[in-house]
Length: 584
Ligand code: AMP
Image (cartoon, rainbow, N blue to C red; front, side, top):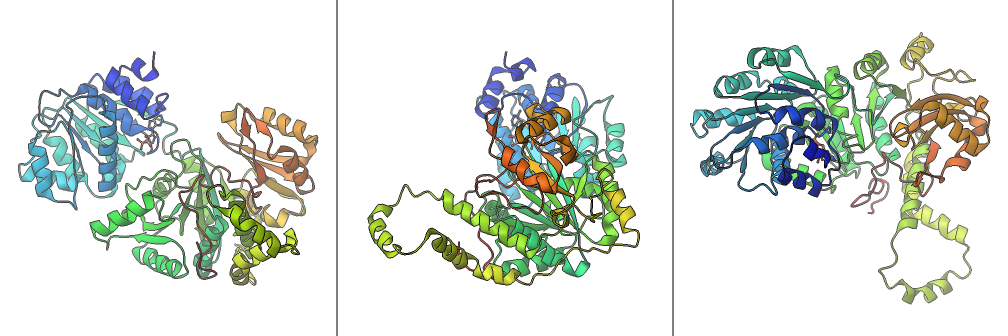
C-alpha cells in the first residue's frame, strides 16, 4: 500500500502527490494527516517551513470538502501575500485529480473587486492574509457562517506582524467551525493564548525539537570591527562564487545602502523593502525565484513569508536582536532536505549572543575567519577554471576553427595558454584583492581565550594555541576537513572514523574532533596529514555516490567539485563583480 494511502488519503490525492514526486510522507504529514482527516479534532503543529506542512494540512482539507456545496468550507489564514500564493499554488497541484474543488487566494495589494467576483463564483477553500480577509468580511463579500475548518499557518509570524486582533475576529466569527488547525514554528505565549481561547483539547505535534534549527544548516560566524562589515560581506560573497542567497539587515536604510553599494560594484543584487510598490516587489521576487537574480537583501519585515527553494546561503549582515528571528532567517536555506549555510557577521560585543543561539537552536556554531584576499582569489580562480572545463563544446562548429587555432598556438605551451586565460579573467580581481587587509577581529576582549573556549566549547585548542583553526592553523595544529558523508549514509562516528582511516592508511592519532551531521561531517586532522587524507578519500565512491573531501573553511575546492551546499546546478552562473571586470 502506498504510504500516503495508508494515512487515509483518497486515490485522487495519492495520485496527485505521486505526480509531484513525493515518495513518502514527511514527519509532520505522517503525524497530522490521520488526525486532521477526522475533521473534528483541533490540532497544533509545531513545524518550520520546509517540513512539508502545507501538504500536511492541505491534503486532508481537500478530502474533507464537499464539492457539491459551493460556499467557503475551509479558511486558511497566513501572514503574507507570498505565502498565500504559495499555499494556493500547492493546493491547486494537490487537487489535480480531484474534480470540482475550488480555491481562491485573497490578499492585499491586488484588486479587491476581482477577488470579490471570484468568490461569488463559489469557492470551497479560501486562502487569505488577515487584513484583506477582514476587509472582505466587512464588505460582506465572504460568508464565514458555513466555514467548518480554519487553518492558521505561521501563527507566530502573524502575531509578530500585529495581526492578533484580526485573528481573534476571524475565530470569533466562524461560529460553525468544527475544527481549528494551528501551525507555527515557535510557541510563544501569544500563540498559546490562541489555543487556550479558541481550541478544544488540541492534539499537539512537534516536528523536531521545539525552536530547533534545521539540522541541514551549517551555522558559521565571523567577528569583524563594525566599520568592516560591508567589506566582510563583500568578501564572503566573493568567496562563494556560486552563491544564491538572501542577506538580512536590521534596518531598511542598511538594506538600501548596502544594496546600492554592491549593485554599483557590479553585483547582481536587489533590495526588498517597504517602499516598493507591490508590483515592484513582485518583479524582484519573480526574478529571484527564477534564479535570474543572485542576491536579495531585505529586512525581516520585508522578507516575511519569502519561500524560495535552493537558497545556498543566508547572510546576517548583523545578528538580529530577537533570537527567534535568527531561526526564521536561517530557515530560508537548508529546505526540503538540502543543505544550506547561514553566515553571521558579528561585532566582538555580539559574540555572547552566539552562545545563547547555540542553546536555543540546539546546534553548534562554527567560528570562521573572513577569507583573506588570497583565499578569495584562489576560490574564484578555481571556480572559473571549473566552469571552463565544464563548458559544453558539443553544439558549436568549433572543429572548423580548430586547424587555424592550432596553427596560431603552435608555439605556445599549455601552461602559457592557461596563464593568459587566467590573467585575462583575473587581473582586475587580483588587483582589487592585492593588498586586502585582514578583516578578522583578533583582539576581542582581554579574556579572549576564555570566551573562545566558551563559544566553541568542544573544540580542542590547536597545538599553536591559535584563535581559530582555519587558515592560521593550516601549517601547524589542526586543519578542518569537510566531507559530504553523514548519518544519512549510515555512518556513526566510530564507523566513519574507521572508514576514513582504512581508506587513508593513517592512524587515529592524527584525528581531532569529529562533528557529524545528517548529510556532512567535519573532521579535524593534523595539518601535516590532511593532504594525504584528502588524496585518499576525495573522489572515492561510497554507496554509488562520489565522496567529496576538502578543507572546510579557507581551503578551495578542487576544480571539479561543486559540492552540496554550493548551490548545485544554476540556470546561469555568476562572474566576479563588474568593478574588477565586466563580463558574464
Ligand atoms: P512546505 O513545508 O509545505 O513549505 O514544503 C516544503 C517543500 O517540500 C515543498 O517544495 C514541497 O513540495 C516539498 N514536499 C512536501 N512534502 C513532501 C514529501 N512528502 N516528499 C517530498 N517533498 C515534499
